[in-house]
Amino acid sequence: DTAVSQTPKYLVTQMGNDKSIKCEQNLGHDTMYWYKQDSKKFLKIMFSYNNKELIINETVPNRFSPKSPDKAHLNLHINSLELGDSAVYFCASSPRQGGSYNSPLHFGNGTRLTVT
Amino acid sequence: GQQVMQIPQYQHVQEGEDFTTYCNSSTTLSNIQWYKQRPGGHPVFLIQLVKSGEVKKQKRLTFQFGEAKKNSSLHITATQTTDVGTYFCAGRRGGADGLTFGKGTHLIIQP
Picture 1: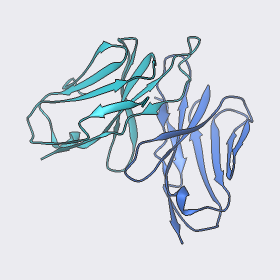
Picture 2: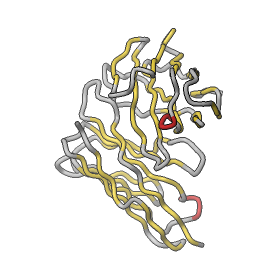
Picture 3: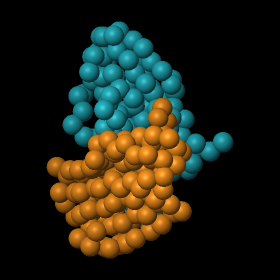
Picture 4: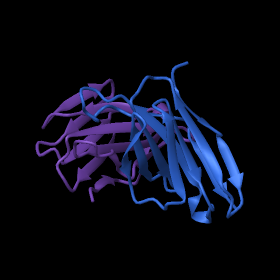
């Protein structure tokens, strides 16, 4: 199946721990993203990578560190987890067509992070 | 920074009634996209509008992009229970700017 896949689907952990979420896309897209969706369903962009290079880094605590080993993978590592980090984290990808970033996003199924 | 406002936040309708959600941007957009998220699911792309004044239809869904490219709307005719979910608009100013999502409109349908 062609898709954007994230693991794990659920992540329950205690405050202060460090955790990682992995994302892979086999759509051949150049650009990958991390979005955070809070309890009110608000979707906010965190990071964007194009072909392994960081192109968008919104105001996100530096406890969050993305890593893109190749253009098909974008992982998210979170240090010293806090209660407010509880949310659903979505990975997404899009093709970059003709130098334009206007293409639609393909989202993964999300990772529901609960910090206790 | 860029803001995309979306109203209403919630909309309850009886099955068969029409539904509209509106999106307004504080800045001119290069394009606007619409997504649907079913309960427990992930956002799924519906459509993209690029041209000023553009209108596109997908079966019972009609999408419009304003003349000034600052506002957009999604209208669903004769809602069905399968239309339940959250509808998001998302705009981009251009270049490498990320998509800014509206807060979404939660559509609840009563049979």
